[in-house]
Amino acid sequence: MHIYFCSEPLWTSVLEGCVAGFLVSATSKAEARAISREIYMEPRPVQGKDKDGKVKILVFGGTTEGREIADALADLGFEVTVSVATELGRDELKDIADIEVVVGRKSADEIAAMLWTGDYKYCVDATHPYATEVTENIKAACRKLQISYDRLKREEEQVEIPANAVYVNSAREACVYLLGHMAQADTVFITTGAKEAREFADILPEHRYIRVLPTEESQRLCADAGFLADHILTGHGPFSKEENVKALEETGATYLVTKDGGKTGGFPEKMQAAEACDVVPIVIRRPKEEGKTMEQLVRKFSRIMEMME
Image (cartoon, rainbow, N blue to C red; front, side, top):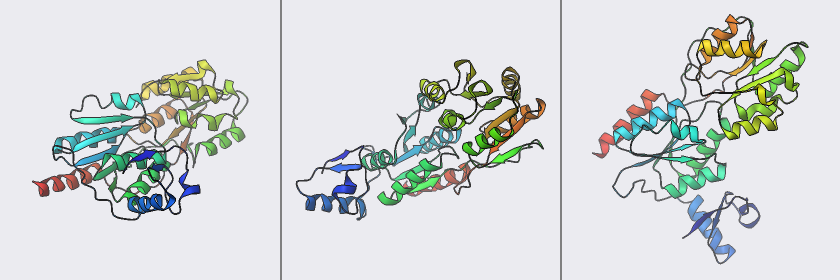
């Protein structure tokens, strides 16, 4: 049987009860429906091993935790593939031996196709805690394909927050708050990433600055959102308190928009810089999530490896 990825959800109009995203080789609707049932309704006979007998694990990464768990799993003897969104994500993995890295942002259909064709036995989701849509797509695909799924959650630490901090639930809420509170001379320094740049398009360009990763994609997204070229700062965090203070002073910021990325994401240093510069932090709340800690996952996969020996 041949399975081909299809970017258009053709299944919804052709087959009953089939998940969009796969186009299979079939000579009739009946045969296609039978293949569909085989893929999606019957248990998949996953071997989950490569030609050398190593158990295959797919890690969705692009975070510090993703790099750490990939390294730990490779050390345990698993065949590890790491999926990251950008070339920067690949660069962070270059020092880890014996892993495969796949680069590129993936839709829900592409995630399912990758899990199916890769014949993985386990999947670890170590994506960013704010990447909730990606996490839901990974979970749904693993559930459908009967692949063992684990979420590696970022631990929450106690961070001292300035008394004037404002909490919101999204980048859009942050923009609405700013539109209602910014004075004529105020400026905002945005550190939520290029993907949310468009959410701040309603603020006058001369009153908003943004710091993003030094990639062409980030530059394009910021330009599309109307950010002035000299209002786009680039860098690869996490940033120190001193670096954040410098950025706040250079931009003349009166507001700082940030996510709660924890210590891993440099959140404490942002709060320290905001307090030192008397800047109002607008914090986008971290989504609630369930999952395992790094220690719990390493312990789990260590036991699995021991039982196989």
